[in-house]
Amino acid sequence: MIVFRLRESAKLIIEACLPIKCLEATVLAIFLTQDQKEFKRFTISFSSEFDGQTFRHVVLGVYANGKYGALGLSRRPDLMYKPLEFPTLATLIHSYAVAYVGHYHRLVKVKLGLPIPHQPHLFETLPWKASLVCSLNYLIVFRALLLRATFSGVLLRSNVCLINTRA
Image (cartoon, rainbow, N blue to C red; front, side, top):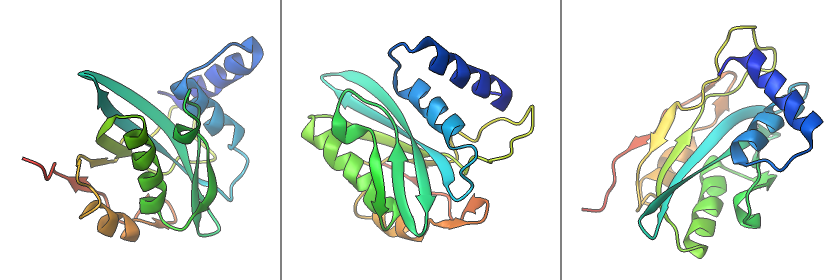
C-alpha cells in the first residue's frame, strides 16, 4: 500500500466515524503516531486456526525507551492494545500467543514487519512482512531468536524464520 493512500485512508476512517476492523485500526495507528518520532513502529500479523477456519489479525508494534507494546483493535481485549511495558519483543508476542490459547485458537504464523518510517516519501511502500515465524512450539527457538531481535536504527538486527517444530 502506498503511504500517501494510507494517509488518505486514515483521514477517511476518522471522518466516517464508523466501526473498523484490525487492519483499519493499524492504518489509523500508523497515521496517529506519524509525528511521534520516539516510537519505532512495525506491524505484527497473526494467523490462527479455530474449528477448521483460518483467522488473521494485525496490530502496530511499537518500541520506545527499551520497551515494547502494541496498538490495535479486536473484539477480544487481550488481542488488541498492549501497554508499552514489555522488555522484549518475545514477551510481547508471547502475551498474544497466550491470549490466542485462551480463546482456543491455534497460532499458526506470526509475521513481523520492518520499521515504518516517520517521514515517508510519496510512493514508498510499507514493509508489512519482513520476518516470518511459523511454529506452534515457538517458545523453544522463537524466544531465543526474538530476545536478540531488537531495533538498531532502521532495521531489526535479525530476521526470524522458523519451521513448524511439530510433525
